[in-house]
Image (tube, rainbow, N blue to C red):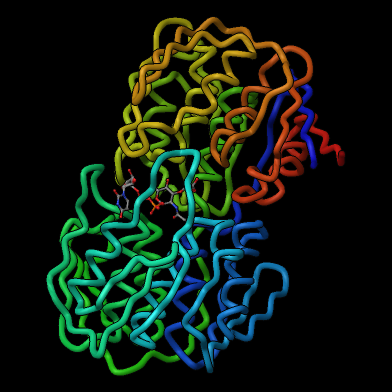
Length: 419
Ligand code: EPU
């Protein structure tokens, strides 16, 4: 298994180009199941999660071609069963349920298993499918959906932890070909949901209100092929900005949507950094000492849970006390024990981490537990004295395209060692 060695102390500066969004690309690729015609999807990052999704689509009968960041999918004849061996590798594989139900009125997809960042149920997805008229059964570890017809309805996406991103995506994908009008209330407002809606509208769907909590979908008879480019990855951009905060220098993230980054730029400014935006880029530079923060994650446009671990890696160096709360995924603190092994002072009482910044970390062997926790360890390694050895780096390859190479181009000293 590959390891990453981060030699701490390198100063980062320069410009990094941000890749296409993983969390946009995954449901958009699945949405290509909704038409028999060819869909060309551009800006698809080279990540293992994307590879899993393309493998699932091939197993469902799609013709899939890929050349660098462009994926072409033709779903002329499809099957409706996705087996456990493929699905278990990635939770986002649940987003084939919506399009299979929408197009074929049936689906049998294995339920993804446990997840290190929390329970991650799909009850809200299933409630939405049922509201559209599907019979829903969970049997033998599979979700089975069947409908003689799908009819538009009012669907509420709110659960005990707030709304759901992939649940909103799934209901949209099931509703675009349904009879009549579907109203989604308490919909997720994430830019990735807007991107999916834009993709589907480019195929002939009639979706309005994406980006607000109230979506309307007027069902159409069929969808056609399209050529579409996914939005830049706001979490990769945010992670790179935190790298700049930790080890910059003046660092620019390019090919981004600054409006999608407001909830990350705000806390970085509050923490004492200077941030400048232009139409397509954001630049961070130092502006005195790092200040502690009180941060709480919430759905978009709030501070994203997908940036929580990376901000913890920054705040361990901010003199004073920072308080970081994650109610979206209250158990998403696997990075805390590893950061503590590097010398951070963090008291955890889920869903809150209280960080006493001491400004000093030392390199240590650490274990990546999930995607964003791995990014936090990489960021911690940049500021640590000595070498940080990150094991189980396959987690980082699920969601960051060539992150070690990109950081090295900015001045970091990171080695990937094949074991
Ligand atoms: N939830 C329910 N029932 C459901 C669905 C969700 O209770 O049916 C709860 C979850 O347990 C959680 C909250 O609702 O407490 C929000 O979860 P959500 O459904 O929004 O998460 P998701 O759609 O499964 C996507 C991203 C995650 C990101 C979350 C939150 C993709 C592929 N994944 O997951 O990204 O953390 O939204 O923004 O888009 C990552 O990229 O590292 C990642 C985990």
